Image (cartoon, rainbow over all chains, first blue to last red):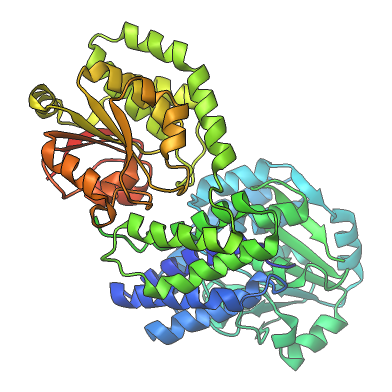
Length: 281
Length: 281
């Protein structure tokens, strides 16, 4: 999907947040904002938000010299989600349909997102999502694809959310290849985060997409990823960034997300906070 | 007061809002954001927010060719406030102390502000402010100054809020010179807005400060204004923009405002939404 004008002030907020995560030096934080501001005229609204994000976070890494500004946040989120696992398993046992319950939990985990300007509480967010009706739900098509695919390509989104993903990976009862970002960007899941989240114990393997943008940009992806992307009948795509990058990249992609910003919600035709399981086009 | 890093994303939001008010042409709206982004590196945090705002809104006027993007909004706000006058007079009659009641109403009118990212409802905001305790209240010092001043210099803030100001001007029972912006900026009150708000019927006269920034920048003000500023024992300064410009410009200034953004609230040592009557330093 294209970017909206609203994305530009949002990227300035992101620059400030990430700059502050990376350094306590206000002069460097200001330089991050200067660089973000200078980027604006070079941004075309034909670009997807993750394409812009890729540039922005590269600038932030270069200016601050910090490769993973959200490192501490990610560690905390993963630890919090791991500690929450017994309760998550309890919620799953109580679900009428184990697969639907696991899909809901995987979406609930998508509240863990430091790219958007929102506060959240993990427990109450999870409880809300477990009760909430789906605004869009292509579950039949999802089941049909799951049934016939030799393996599932599972695109992770945020660190911490990845812990929730492990429960859906178990519930799928198919070989799963879990895909992470190639380098740190916002709080998105990278290889080490996936391992720390326990994904290695449930997935067949963990690979990098090759894209270091906050979304899976196909023109940045590795040959290995693209081959798997072509072979599978089912790609599970978590979160907004992957939706922004892949919304029109095939009917074998199923987007699981919570709409957390007005631009995404409008593109999906749903309200902010709605939950979605949507087949791609 | 100085600007904070938070002011920079906020200015990008303002650029988008004002650009959209000025034109329906998305290309021009993008050019406004481009110009705002390009300004960032030239912004020093030593500048006050109204100094930055002055530059930003000048760019917006130049790019869009629209001198007063908020014209329709201001007309609507003034009309809404005028229609509300009988109720406002009723609230004033019911006040224990007429002057305190009028001060509260003048602060209540300060909810009308399109520079901040907030929604408001005029009626419920007024009702809330009439009940709300002051977070800061230098009323004794205010009374003492009012008693001995030959006239009051009253710095208006927003169009529509100006209608509320007329009730305080009446209640002061002193000659009042009402001061407006020199040119349109956000929804700030200019000469024509003050006249439309009925200020001409209660104030001795209406003058321009000479400053076209969204705040009274003394180094931009006219000689006439500066002479009056030096002669009076009491300046009433409405709103955030005037506070940002004048917070350390003298003990004869009394700031009446509702804290509507975290940067202002922190500078005042109060919470967002708190109401304040504060003597300057």
